[in-house]
Image 1 (cartoon, rainbow, N blue to C red):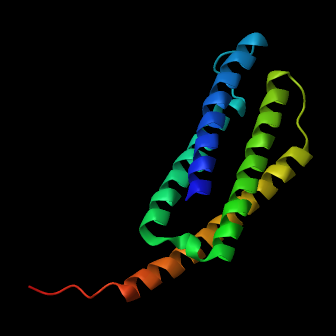
Image 2: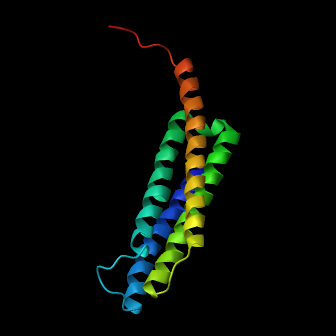
Image 3: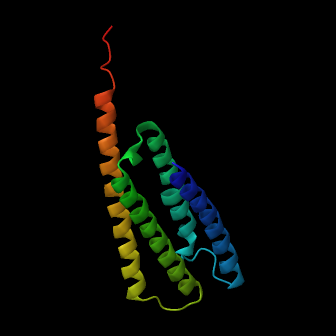
Amino acid sequence: MKKLFNAAFIYMILGVSAGLFYREFTKANDFPAGEFTQLAVVHTHLLTLGFIVLLIALVLEKTFAFSNSPKLFGWFFWLYNAGLVLTAGMMVWHGILTVLGEESSAMISGIAGLGHILITAGMIFFFLALGRAVTKSAKESPAPVAA
């Protein structure tokens, strides 16, 4: 549980910092207001996929103890976080290039795609671990008594 809490806290700080960076970096470089850059959505990705998703996972861990499948939990945790960091990093890189008026490359898109694949793989392991824990919990719970 501590891993999930700490990771959620770190993503909260990163998400808020990304929003601040976006605002200040675009102002410092006289980037036209209303013109799109990926920097505008990095903070929402970090806050939603990092902070909120991991807080939900923390609640599910408290309820079902899905980390009792340590291999599945480990694969979920590390794949998901590696994917999210890779994806957000590529978004920042692409956004900085946009603000500076430079061309992006297919490499950035490819690495971001790899990040998305890792997030997806992490979520698959999350559901495998959670499904195992929910099934175990259902078998251990007494059947409800009809009134």
